[in-house]
Image (cartoon, rainbow, N blue to C red; front, top):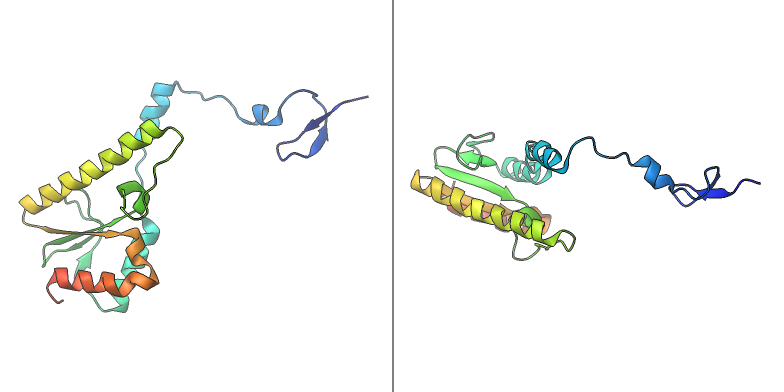
Length: 164
């Protein structure tokens, strides 16, 4: 009589007693750890799409014009108001260390702490570079784009633009 093995979802299935299905489903990596790290480091995100789209909707709904995306300024601002020399960044609460919502991952804590602190340092350096070049910088937290906070965020943006 054949013994029953457990499938990947805990269901019984015939065959191969004593072997874990999940071990067969996960092939070993073809790259060394260092090579995998180098490969992954070259992958660049396309931005914080959902939060940027929320800001676009807010700008359009309230008739704010004069902004562009895809800037090549230092730090690659999400939005640029060229005439007002204002660079706008939409910062994710996790990635940029929001004081209200940032969390510190417990798994691989040293890696994440180093990475997230480096993100904060880079943000400060980008702010300095843009200020030295004569730009003003506005950083908007991801949580500031919720419906409940949209009016406050819009007011802040208008004040920074000088009443635009």
